[in-house]
Length: 201
Image 1: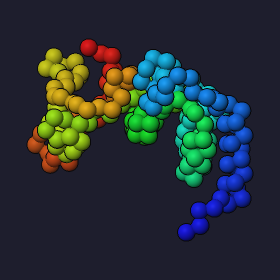
Image 2 (image 1 turned 90 degrees about the vertical axis):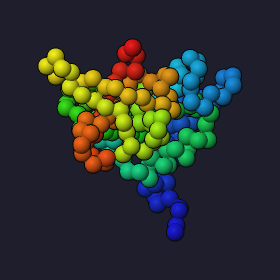
Image 3 (image 1 turned 180 degrees about the horizontal axis):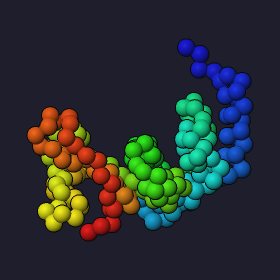
């Protein structure tokens, strides 16, 4: 297999390299903070994410209408390769931008997408996945957390259960949670995904 860049890929790589040389941090202040979990690290990560988003490099494969380049996976790989040569801040956005927000983009209504996609891409809000449970780990089919309609007829949902070992939960603003809404359905079915405010008590 030939892993050499095509002429188009080489041109894109040079474009990325030039942009990173002009915009990426030249050195990391203090101790490395891989996930950007400290307040200083998180602020640096958000600032770097915002700069990438403004230039179209935050989510290269996303459609242009949502701030991406409409690019291909190889271009995303090229950016990642080139970015790794610079002392950039940690990336606490991977789960949100890799899994949570694409789900919102695919299934949510336009109002919800407009509310959440841009802020997530710009690093203003961080998402996590609330999948793992005490008895089932990340086996989604084994989910026991349940969601039931509130008995007051309001149409609200009441979620009961326990989610543990959630990467990035401590600094996330929102999370997507898988709940069993039909306990009589086969275990891979009868489930619903909700998004919740991680700051909600």
